[in-house]
Length: 353
Ligand code: TRP
Image (cartoon, rainbow, N blue to C red; front, side):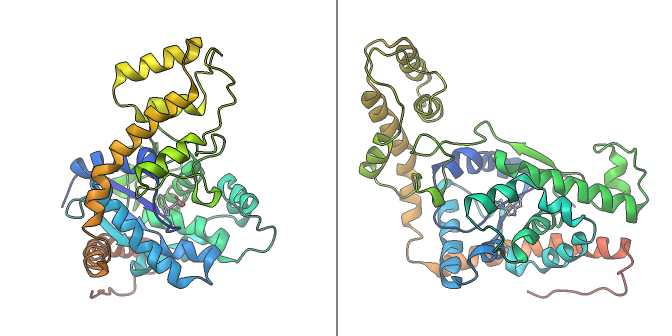
């Protein structure tokens, strides 16, 4: 058995991925796939929580994510790309874990509350919508993940996952309340390691509106497939509020965040920043052109790789099938352990795939 740490993270299919996904999460996954047992989950059932009336779109979006993964350099031989809806242990653990969490605790989750607000759901959301939060704890724990690379907004979900893992281990594995999260006993005696949130350097990339987080629903994204022309146009729209070339610029502006992240020539990035902050005859327009060029240079090899998968659903589905098979080996083992511990171990079953 592998002694490497297990990594689990996922994406809800809402359309193509964008550069915020890349710098916030996928870039980190490229390193992790070399050194860890990685599972990247296509959280397609979560997409149904708000879009159950668009099944065909969700299906297509799910395949698009995999195309973007391939474009960005995820290697399906190293990391298992796995489909939530064909990983049944997740659904079963969701049911079990929903009994370990007070309803109010789920509803107080700030990320859930924010989504209800941003999406304008009011009180008109499905029962499954808040249930996805419990589902996400099962996504993670089904793999007995040690670490979950995510953006800042997902941290409350990981916090909740840690609570579920602790509660389960205490209730059903006889682990004392005072055992520390990283005490080896937790994993030796308990079913679940207590997973850590691994928030990358760029916890949140601001969108091309210069104000909000980059997010498809806010229409402020640069897609992996955007042409240099589109990139230039979108970066051109970045709002800065600066009036002239001699205005001292704010070092924390969205423009400077983009310089920091995308201008890979570090000397040039430092120079741009220095001139901008001092208002030394440098216009926002000029900086934007350099940023746009840097982004397009980053996207070019990705777009080349992506082209190989365009219009070819069969290859994409083969990749998902293989990853899901590997995921089921891991998650069925977890489920059997969890059932045994919680009084549900009547007999064993075997999923054929
Ligand atoms: N909720 C995450 C998002 O919208 C996607 C996700 C689903 C996820 N299951 C996960 C992320 C498990 C990390 C771990 O981005």
